[in-house]
Length: 319
Image (cartoon, rainbow, N blue to C red; front, side):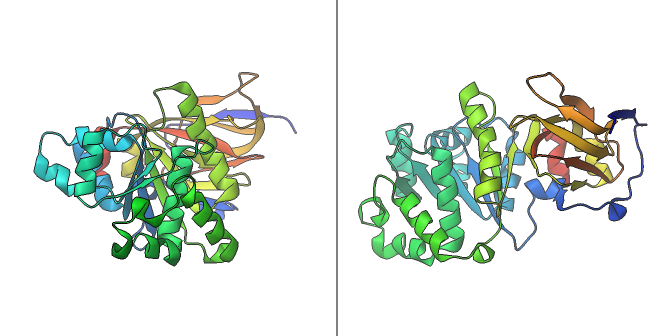
């Protein structure tokens, strides 16, 4: 079949109800999860550069807050101007090998009864340690028994120092059927930008979680973008028209994992059909944008990364 590229007007009506799709994403729910859904905010070890009112709002919208190792330093410094504010925004957990965590910050959060778990293994990243911890928090009574007050004075909360979290996680996944695992909305702050190898690792986690722990709905938020995975076989992306008009700019369909074919899009400025896309060959749908009034549709042969430009100064008005 021949490929097509069509330039659309700035706003078109897309009948999402008539489009067959296997997957659905509501853009606002990536940042503001539905009440009753399990949700986690993961702070990674980069400078927190989103506006404070937005950060505080996102914090309040998520059930669980985790700092990956030195990210606790970033959080501590981010709220340095007001001790009352700093005391209000305490993470539930800090986890990692703790090589990046300053002694001052360690002692501060320990005194505030934040659960700090050291995991020394170098065969997994702090991101993976955090994800395993989040899974355990929402799904493992055994884990909660370990970190209960009766074990508070035990070294490392009774969790084996090298890779105890991974051992507990593996035990949990072996004992639970997939249908019993609780779905989790995970918003990650940081991890994109800074060192390029760490950015690439963050992107790999979108693919890894999709294949190995698909009960996670992972999205990265930066001062400029939302970044998440579009699964193959048709995804309908929904949004409020005012949210789209005020908060969203350009977007890119990025075949970072592998070359693929965009079978069809509906509701982009430049819609395509049967369009091969590859980083190696330089064929990438970048600087595109949503023109569907309330939704757009993306269907690819393989999973693909979608980045959406956001205007963080306006985002808080829609949360």
